[in-house]
Amino acid sequence: MRKAVRHILNPELPLRSRLFQLLSTIALAEFIIVSVYTVVTGGNADHIAVMLIGTALFAFTVAWTFRSGRTRAGSAVSGLLYYALYPMTFFSSGGLYGGAPVVFAFALVYVFLVTEKWERIACMAACVAVSGACYVMSCLHPQLLDRHTVAMEHAESLLSILLVTLLLCALFAFVTEVYRTENRIVQKQKLEIEELNRSQKRFFSNMSHEIRTPVNAIIGLNEMTLREDIPDGVRENAMNIEVAGRILLHTVNEILDMSRLETGTMEIVNGDYQTTAMLSDIVGMIWLQAQEKGLEFRVVADPALPKALNGDAVRVKQVLLNVLTNAVKYTRAGSVTLTLGSRRENGRFLMTYRVDDTGIGIRPESIPHLFTAFQRMDAQKTHTIEGTGLGLSIVRQLLDLMGGTVQVTSEYGKGSTFLIEIPQAVADGTPIGEVDFRRRAGSAAAKQAAPEGIPALNILAVDDTRMNLLVVKKLLQDSPARVDTASSGAEALEKTAQTRYDVILMDHQMPEMDGIECLHRIRSQENGLCRDSRVICLTANVGAEMERLFLQAGFDGYLSKPVRGQTLAEALARASAAAR
Image (cartoon, rainbow, N blue to C red; front, side):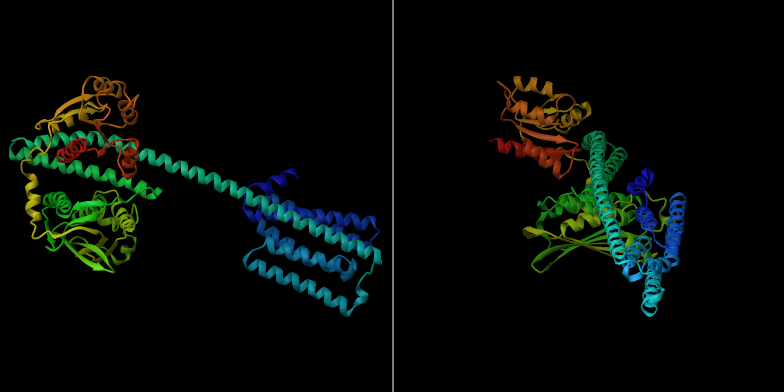
């Protein structure tokens, strides 16, 4: 019995098997009770024989089914036993005047619950047919019934009602227990999934931080190389390092963004941006990639485009870079063309970006799967092409967040066209005019000048990585700013107690004392000289939620690594202006 109860309550077993065990156990118990009752009350020999034989056969069937696990076969055999025994039980127990009607109802419930699909229909039809035949025969030939006394008929009817009530109560108790168990399992799984998502988010954030730290040094020091008067061959090598670093950073961002999109933590942060400047960054990166493959990269921009837009420039740039990078990767010869335009629809201003390539194209049956993560179309042709398989999936999800759309047309073997539309607000409607993006991109390989507009500030850079401190010092070495460094929060507090700094560039993840704690100690430092200094978080922890966290913690600004000289100069200029 204990084994049967464990079987019934085991959530790992199939529900049908557990239900069969429950109903069959109750039915067997009822068989035994009725058999004992029949013997005790002195029932006729035929009725006693039928009940004892039926009880033995049903007990054997239940035991065999339980041991073999063949629930389907056990259900069928149980049905056959009912069809064989019910007529004899019906006539020997008084038929309509005994407990037969209730037994008939029990049989229908039993058959309905332990069978399924066509078996259920067939068994229930047979059950109704057999029971109906018994009722018709008792009506036409009442002499076939073995009538009991009125007291016995009432007793048998009451007993049948009590037994079926027991069945229904047990059934409801089982359903309630199943619901509670499943609910506990679902809640446990929900907690496990939430913890898994948190762990995944922490892993990708830590991975991003660890990769961005050396990339910050690579890109920052490489920028210093490009500022120097160096031979053309060395400059070309430095530009290739620049592109490789940006591609590595782009790949890290893709993985981190995919994690955010999956966990629903990706946010769109709108702000004003210069149309030409944003597009120039994109063209500069793609032009170098196309040049390496010997492809022609053309940019056609509508001169009437607004000078400044309001939207999430980072995500718009990410969408275009992913599509353009794919176009270059999957084009062996010919050209890639970016066409820029705009239109108005229902009061909305839509920026349109069209990317045409002469690449390998996409099969028509593959287009519906194009934006699925980790999918690579036409693997036989593309297995040698590098990539994470996340780019276009991220494109679709980012466009959904921004209210944009993407349409794809392609002719296999000849090329593809991606048409992207993104709603943006117009911040400055002045037309951009004729812009030579190719000249702008070409000038990227020229000698880079030191950023201008940096005030003569006294700056403290705080970072536990020596290379990051070196990058900050070198990026600002040609400016009138003076830079001191500290490799820990404790050292920073020592310096802020002795020297007045206009701006402090503070890393976040540092051992013993992180950037937020160090900021709060500087603000409350007794006799400190930097309690009202501008403190900017310069960190490898990226994302809108991280920026909001740092600003809410009290930082006056936020910069993500790797940082460019011009970006750093603009942040310092803003900090200087705010301090006046």
